[in-house]
Length: 306
Ligand SMILES: Nc1ncnc2c1ncn2[C@@H]1O[C@H](COP(=O)(O)OP(=O)(O)OP(=O)(O)O)[C@@H](O)[C@H]1O
Ligand SMILES: [Mg+2]
Image (cartoon, rainbow, N blue to C red):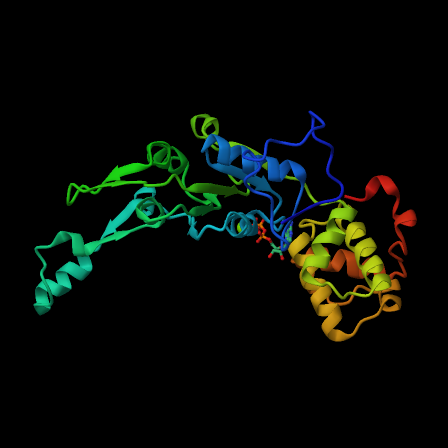
């Protein structure tokens, strides 16, 4: 993670204490100063970091880079609408036990053989400190965040079937992402450090693009960014393209050998950027009517760069 150049200066104007700044970033992820501070704040308080932001703004990727930056292993729990808090702790594999009983395979009396730890269980019982990503917590039902509160707070739980207690040896760094599909309960929020990833401005976006496409030619990059921010400005779009779509679009342009002049009157590979037919139709008909997207940032207007 490298720091974006557009970061506001720190409120105190000074540098943080070195033992506070445990996380300094990696070269593969561009983070604002505020995001790095939020990670270090969560580390110092030993609280989960809750990250929100538009889809494609690097919430999930952040966890990988925090783990890399801290030199710790990463475990992930990808939440689905059917996810239950208990699954994060452990599941009791009754089906396997039944099969073993039927086919006389192994010692079915030893219930411990059938306890499968979930992601929380695994990071608690790991020998060393881990980073745990709980991805898209808002996908689960409303009770889910409250249901995992106690275990995350206390860092311990009991396996009911065996009476064994699983206690975290080292408090994991927990990163939770949310796309804002549901409001999260206040009791849950109280226990987290919160950060909202703002959509990158042009300068920060140049740095993000450089991480993924270091050799993109300057004139092409300029045209790509002007067109991309212009598209994001179009009010009629139902789904504005995000960072990850921009990265894909550039990959497609590079592979096809596109050059800057081609982008003057058309937007090739629109399907990499716009993801529904109303949006592609709206932009397509604008271009067909002879409409021209702006050719540079001056024409786009400085106020409308985000
Ligand atoms: N700050 C960044 N630095 C480097 N790459 C980034 C950054 N932000 C986004 N990206 C690129 O965008 C892609 C999408 O990021 P990611 O999947 O983490 O987004 P997300 O916020 O989790 O999206 P969603 O809400 O849809 O899950 C990444 O794989 C990466 O290519
Ligand atoms: Mg994600």
